[in-house]
Image (tube, rainbow over all chains, first blue to last red; front, side, top):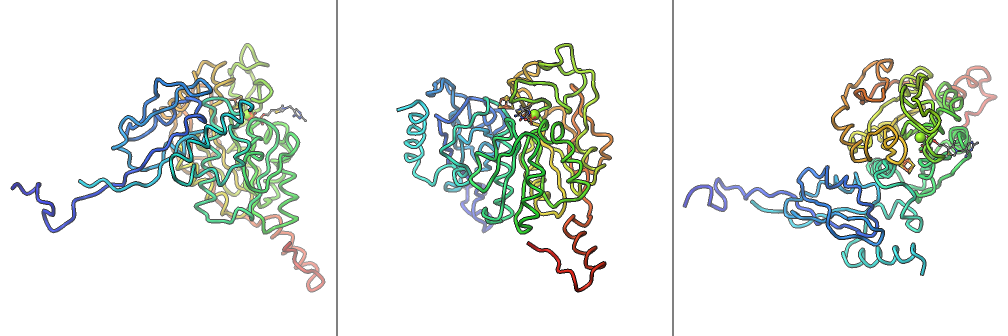
Length: 91
Length: 299
Ligand SMILES: Cc1ncc(C[n+]2csc(CCOP(=O)(O)OP(=O)(O)O)c2C)c(N)n1
Ligand code: SF4
Ligand SMILES: [Mg+2]
């Protein structure tokens, strides 16, 4: 077995990183795209769907990559997206 | 059911489905007034997020905070926050806040208002509150125009900007707000753009925790008027513009930080100094003059 395949190569746990669950409140969104453009992990994309107001809300296309930094929640002028801490991603 | 009620029900259903406490801003906003009136890609909502985060990080009980706004799109902030707030007449947020602070010096009094409100119609109040060093924090959302009334040219509109009342471009010289604030006596002066969420939050924390007249200017997109008329695109294009053209220069002399129409934007913390507040000056002065006949005023 190569050293990098050992669970604890040098007696350390495998590194873990934070992970966030992304919650998008579709009906509040005005489709500005701020979160899509500025998510540092490129997790979001504007969807093809329309919400009731006729805007395209974002959707998480790569939610595994979310690190729960909360940038989307802070840059969203509509209070329509946020993240909550989820189980950390190991390895 | 009205359209707004229907939207609210849909939002509620989705929040319930997610099975958690809901959006963190729901504790801070009067949710019965949301969705707000701000246009898609307007920057004011971002400033509200950062203000809420700043209060949360300071850890001050919301009952000890009061928010005062004047009139304008930014002035709406006072109506949306779920803390004691007052939506004053146009330009009069600072005198109202001054009275509030002197009536109850234990309150943390914050003025959040627009550029037109604070430094055009309310310019004299701004100048004198800073001169006296009244212990309040002023957060100015600068979108370079009188947005709510349809985009008239303001005292902050950069030279050459096209607005409703300057169809051939503005030929006046605008205020450089950090320079103005410093020259009239503000103890803390910083400028960030709506894109700088962490920096503006830190600046708000600094300003809120520092005694005296503290001033934070946030440049924010107004896609409906300023960005559209001046061909900047929408608010997202304008955030990209901030991203490409902002330069952080802490401690830069404020005389150098004018904002032109298409120039680079200097942001940072420019002033952080100590001066006795108006109330401290009054108390120490009268104590010196009157001795035991004077009881210092503490509210
Ligand atoms: C005494 C008075 N004069 C004029 C007005 C009209 N008025 C309402 S909002 C506004 C401009 C606000 O501009 P600003 O403070 O920059 O806020 P913004 O809408 O740009 O956020 C004006 C002139 C008023 N309401 N009261
Ligand atoms: S008019 Fe401008 S400042 Fe007012 S809500 Fe719309 S984008 Fe924002
Ligand atoms: Mg304005």
